[in-house]
Length: 169
Image (cartoon, rainbow, N blue to C red):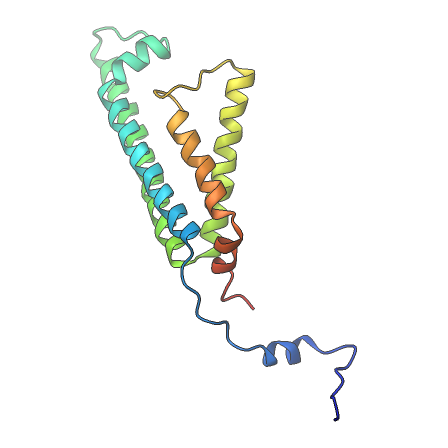
């Protein structure tokens, strides 16, 4: 029986040409769960923006210490700042929703990008908690922090990584 030996070195082009197409792979639960968690993160962001809009004056006066007199110019500036914050927040949430769809479809770069931003968010919350004595409460960051941790765990799983890299050569 003759066995054909493989050479010690093969060109990358020859190796790529011999690779079969990747088998069809079902979407793992971790990928679906990660995409759902990103959507839940978007919903939490929408709720936060709505509550910010409703409590804008209170936030400015009590939390940020900005005195608002009955001056029309200060009121107009305050309203303009609110519109800018709400528009930027809405844009970020829309982009995050697109990332959720891309993750669900198996995009590796979207998965990695969402994991990077979740890591930054978790790290920022930790710095605020340990360094600035900020409280982690249900009203402030507990829900988003929990969602970020779950997103990171779901999207960094072996099955989610394999599914996202299945078309890579």
